[in-house]
Image 1 (cartoon, helix red, strand yellow):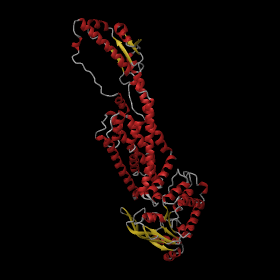
Image 2 (image 1 turned 120 degrees about the horizontal axis):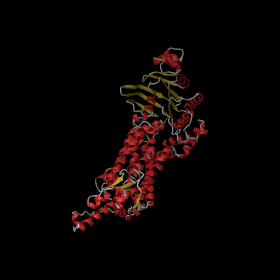
Image 3 (image 1 turned 90 degrees about the vertical axis):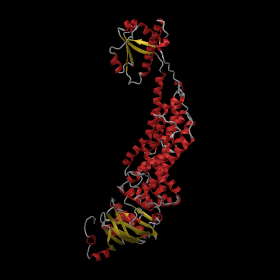
Image 4 (image 1 turned 60 degrees about the vertical axis):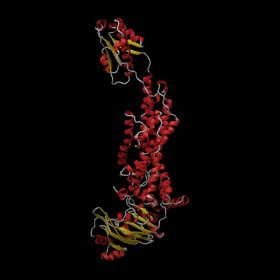
Length: 244
Length: 391
């Protein structure tokens, strides 16, 4: 359960995010849709405690992000915009490192890593050094690293960015799987189709603020249009930066 | 999770990462050997020169003009040989170290009791010529002095009258102290090894995390920033210390191999001295690691960090150069200055001087303080939004 209230963040004179609120329930996928530069990543970073909001409040499972940042990070699995791995470590070692930093004991860690490798179909390359991995394999290792501590809440920043068709399908399957396990999943994307296909609730942001929210049907009704594309263009006010 | 546990997890990962990185391993294991090898080579060159005691071959132009002088030279283990066609060119080209020219008017002037002209062709820019030149010159001067004394005696004058002042040198330097001036380079190399040993590790653990975009995921774990920095620092310190230990072992072996006693240099540098040096310099490894991490944390890329760090590495070599030119006593203010202090103290150990305990303590205390300040600074940088996301 993620609850963000009235988040605001400025960088110098630029207002990156202004009065953004969103609530992501357990067992649901909440999508943040917006064109590039709308403030999606900054919002994600405020939820994940790495960026301190100028005002507003984030609660994860009822814990306040500014008061207990470590506790909030423990409850979150984050696939950030930056998904660099350690090239000289194997896929398994990369995942294990983050499991240990999450405080897992060695036997639990072994179990979890084994299950994740299987689930993500990484078994064949698990003991190879990450240097030389394909984009898809890197993304899988990064997602395994984010999930190794079995967080109740998952934040994914543009999870299908740079992936081919097969990897994108696999990633969507995984996201649905996480929802079915009862996790609160938040992901942000500028790809309209992806958001409408996956999300139970959609929050549309543009120029740092929320311009619309609801299910796909509610958004259609709100905009009074027949196609989702027209609905998005109508609420955002421009076609710029959106990919159908 | 305890700070200690995080530190161990991070330290272990960084070490594993480090030993798999060729650059890190090379800079910690191989580069530190460079200093001892250079010292050994330089010493052997100096030793062969000093030990050179064979006859000196001296080309002489016009030996027939000064038969007595030639006889004297030959009695001094100087072998007179035929001169080259152009003495000046031969010396300038390095074919000959020294050529003596005796002018035709030598005999006439000599008989008349006037200074008889001879020239020595030498090239003072060449090191290898110094010993034969010194030998030839002193043989000629001895001859000149002897003849002068005889002339005075023949005229009934006490030769002492021509020497109003008699200068005698009283050399207080022990042979060990003389050798220490040559050994002043050892501290410099040790210092260099400390700073080079952990350089790649420090860069990889800070700017490297930013460059490969793994810093954000790392900071998304619930670990404390301080504990992360401490773990990285511990691993870097291990590599810096490795450089230090390898240079020391190399220097100890090098000095044990060199026949220093043969030329009157008495260098006491055995395992006991090496341990002293280790104790004095070991505090520098954590400081170097902390300083390098702090500086590298300002950089966004590996390359940028390397540029900053190579400047930082130049710093500790400056006192070394300075001390080679201008030695300082180990009991002065210099002891408390980090790096300079360690070098002054280390030089004291090599010279066989007594080491003032307060000096060793003061230098270690200042080093410790700097270490803590740099670690604190690095932790601050690690937590700042600008460091995590700035690009």
